[in-house]
Length: 281
Ligand code: GUN
Image (tube, rainbow, N blue to C red; front, side, top):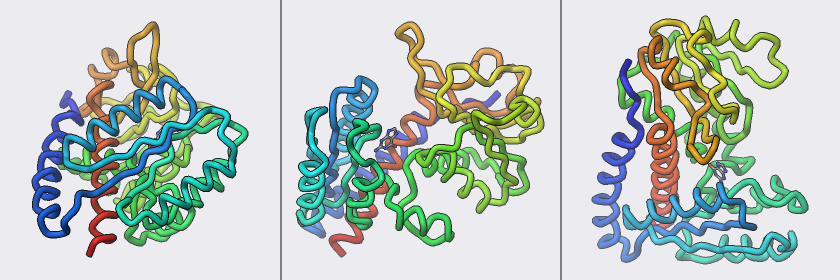
C-alpha cells in the first residue's frame, strides 16, 4: 500500500507558494489577506480556524480573524461581510461552517463577493464549477484532486464511489472526478447497499463523517481510497476508513491525520493567492 501523504505534498506546495508570495509582495507592495469569520465556539471549528490562521502565517498570507458571539444577528453579520467585501486590502473571505441555526447560511455565503469567495461556496462560483468553467474550487475537493495528481493516479475510466453528498465535499468532488473521466456513483444515507457499491470501486472518496465506516471487506483489492473523515473518538482523531484493515487491500490510502486535512488547507491558501492575484493585477 502506498500512503497518500497529504502532509508531505501540502508542505511542498506551501513552500513553493511562500516563495512566490515573497516575490509578489515586492511587485504588488502588499501581502495577500484572508478574512476568517468564526461564529460561536464550536471546538472543531475553533481548531480548524486556528490551523488555517497558522498556515496563512507560514506562507506569508496576512489573516484577520473575526470572532463573533454565538448570538450575533443576521444583520450584524451581513454588515461585517459587506464591509469586508469593500475593504481593498482583503482578498479572500471565509465564513467557517457550520454557523448557528438562526443565521441563513446560504444567504450569508452568497453575500460574500464572488471575487473574494476563498471557499468557492458562492452560488455563482458553484455554477462555474458545474459548467466546467475556471473558478475558485472548494478547498477539500481541490486538495483531493491535487493529491491524486501528485501520485500520478490516472482517474480517467475509473469507477469512483463517493460516500457523502455535501456541498463542501461530496457534490463538488463528484463533478471534478467526472470531468477527469471517472464514472461516478454518489452514495448517501438512503443508499440501500453501500458495500455493494464500494466493493466494485476503483476509487473511494469517504466523506460521510462516520468513524471507520469503510472496512476492509468493503474495498476491492488494488483500490485507491481517500479518507476525508475527521471524527473524534475517545479523544483520538479517526477517519471514515478503518485504516488498519483497509491498508491490507488498498493500493493507495490517505491517512487521518496528515492526509486530506493538510491538502484542504493548501487548497484554501492557493485559492486566497489566486484571488489576490486577480485583485492586484
Ligand atoms: N467547515 C468544514 N469544512 C469547511 C470548509 O472547507 N470551509 C468552511 N468555511 N467551513 C468548513
